[in-house]
Length: 210
Image (tube, rainbow, N blue to C red; front, side, top):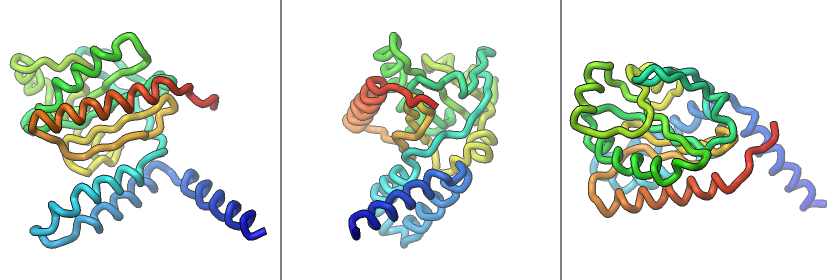
């Protein structure tokens, strides 16, 4: 009897969490994250990784907000058409060193999974001129949506710093979230292996029939 009651309560909590709107989930997760970070500056480094991990856990399972965007080359993307694909979203800007350092990793991931149901979409706050100048020096081998700051911060409500990277499963649910970047080669390799493993895991799963 007690076991049945506990199971019922647990199911109720799960259903309640999944009934929250996208805005409600993001607001709740942001509040918890900011509370975790409101410590003296000399302690922030000690708690940042823990706070970032808890933020990721808070966002897992959330269906990402729908969107309709056009990339730098005029190609249109509808989130509804991405159902059934594993999608990596990256939010960045060209003068952010860790943002730029990650680009070769994403280029390699695109190449590794080019024959599968995987895609990368990046959202940059830069305008067209700045992005074209940047691309004269750097290769970005996946779609870039420019002038995206308002979309990132007001529509997606992603105000957790740059870069921010989100992995969506075949049902457009968040299965991985990372805010902040790395600069050294060893950690970049670890990051690449992590994403490759997550992408493979979710490519191997079928989308839910909804």
